[in-house]
Image 1 (spheres, helix red, strand yellow):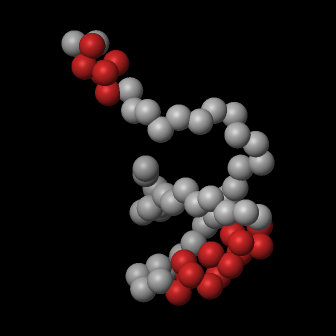
Image 2 (cartoon, helix red, strand yellow; image 1 turned 30 degrees about the vertical axis):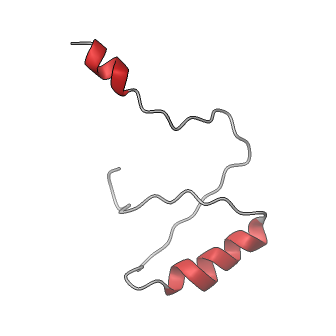
Length: 60
């Protein structure tokens, strides 16, 4: 990450009301949290948590 973001959280919630509750009632009251910028996905295109580590070492 670069720029003004220090952390990236992926949060799974049931609906936008649960997201609001998490941000307003939980995250914003966490010590050390100064600002919050949120966005959400309308549709999942691809899902993967795999990192391409093998491809990086094979390239040598």
